[in-house]
Length: 426
Picture 1 (cartoon, rainbow, N blue to C red):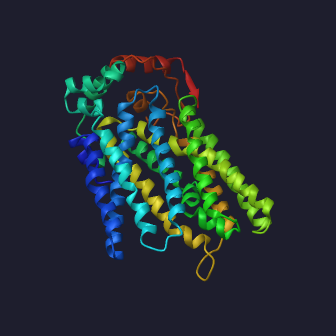
Picture 2: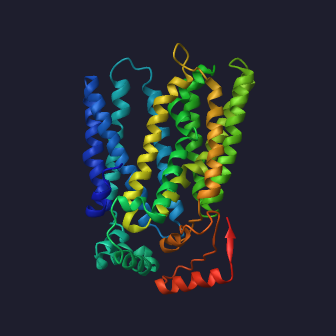
Picture 3: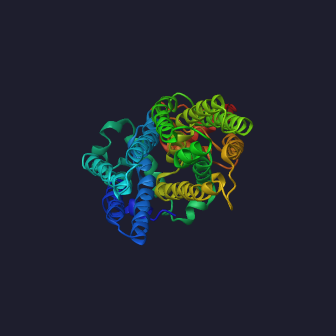
């Protein structure tokens, strides 16, 4: 469980990000860069990892709460774009320092992280606190100033806040009850399945896999796949506002499943000596990255940033993000045993893609039954969608015109929609 959620509800989203970056993450980077022994390096790694976990829970929350709903998906999806840029730069730096025979081979890649920390900290000094947090703290005047660019939604934020304060104060136990528990289950499964798509394998162990599979220059191939990941994330930022989140997830899971099975079959049948088969495998790995970068990469963060009510949002996002990092650790730990050659190792090579392809069958089933439409939908309507009696893939057709509706108006609108049986099959 991410420990920073209570501080986010007390100090604010902006200062929580600042503290996580300056105090926690930077301390970990300093310890790793200056370390001369393995225990100190491991301690620094753990502290930096905690900082990354805190940031990965809070930045999508900040983006979600400061974005108008008509571009919320693109803004939150930009978090995944930043991840892809970081992976590309890391691959380039690692490639540049791979042949060094001194401590610079690991100190330089680690020390480079200071630059991005400075960029985040400098940018935060220019950014406002989220209007939703300020309204939650009854700082309405400051909330108005913060929401200048979101002025059409300010009254909606205040109406939702008044409704939520009429309820009891939420605790972590409330995150597991009723329809909030259903949302939490959906968010945790979505983040967990994102890690089971094989994305981590490509970008963590891609160099080793390509080398074992007989490719001539696995480092260059790793840089190429990272470039594909960066540039093909941009179509996802566009599509996330044009298509429903659910349809994007279904399309992405189907496309990635096909690519994974083709890579697995090609590598298994042709072996490691057929150059044409190697080129085909690289091509379908790149197509797989296209589907991931355009769908499951950004959309998983978008959906989890949209489905939780304000009173438990920080707590629930901390748990969904913790699920993401837990699966990240598990895959990073298990994968070497799956692909390495030698006693005690499975040496699956290309056969490992059969495993990732099988996971996509689960992704498709999960998306079909458990993902709602969240594009351009406000928080009150999402609460309506998560009622137990509503089918997971048939929800009311709700059209948001940008104006704030009172709770009474929302109730009347829901009754009117239900009376005519107007449903949209997503």
